[in-house]
Length: 417
Image (cartoon, one colour):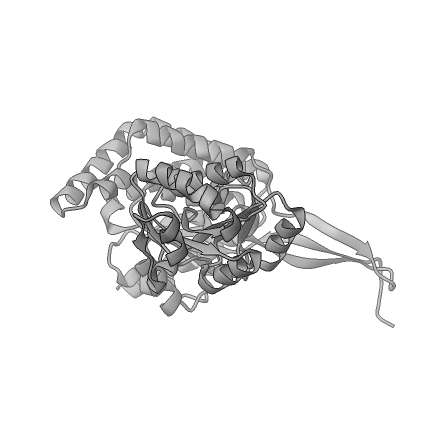
């Protein structure tokens, strides 16, 4: 029975998590390097397994973009291996003690960083997520249950075999990383309800997947639904910086959650900056949708609707609104932002500080493109996803985000009086 299978996976993951929690950094790093070596050694087998998935995908009518995300080539496998070696080179957050202070009673009180336990990761399409997620969970001392999409089942099983080789070579439990071997969608429903065995769920994929997990999960979820990101060009902005940031935030890549979807421009600078930006956007094939003031400046612009301010396009479409100033920009962001990433372009230090303080998003930026909201760019080495929730982590989720903290108390026979 599928339920029995998933419960067994959960039980074994829980036992492995206990062992991992006491595994030293050297052993975890050795496992990561061994997995990387196994991926490189087994590259021909991985490409062969991936070819089966690609053929099924073509037969089922997957579009070119989906097939590209699904494809594993030897260069992509080499990047997966290099990513694991980079994770091995990162500082281990587990066991770090911070804030240790003496209290009036004489005890010392601080915090120790500890693994979350068992992390269930549900994802689609990209087989590289199997290796990336396994590496991040392993380094942060967590056991992982990985449930990839049915379209990548052969690829994920082949990568899982390499992970098992690496764990075995390093003397770590095979159950530290388990790939769910069934494509039955019922397995997802079981995984997100196993509160006894799973400590957190991380969904990575399309909006429908994340909505389903958020709606049905009994296990806590780290996720973001939308990436409705904004750039606000203030009337105290440097024009060159404004054009550079706003262009990059939209066009560097269209289908990512940290791509700008709405550009806000202060009325005092709009007539100077929008025509030049419009030329650049139109040369890049970006459709512009604007408010009435925007259309006065850019007559060829399509009229924006209320729905546009609420939409994550993930496409070469940009909505533009001219606002009176900072207050109206912040009000618009607080009304329509998905709390992912929002940026201001300004040379006014006071306004920049207000924007940082008042905009309530996972990442808030000054004079920088929203495309920089990424674990690698933030120095986290890698990320397992991005969270726009407020608990337990916000923004890109790296190794530290896959841990929690507990109080530690040091005494010497101290008792309460």
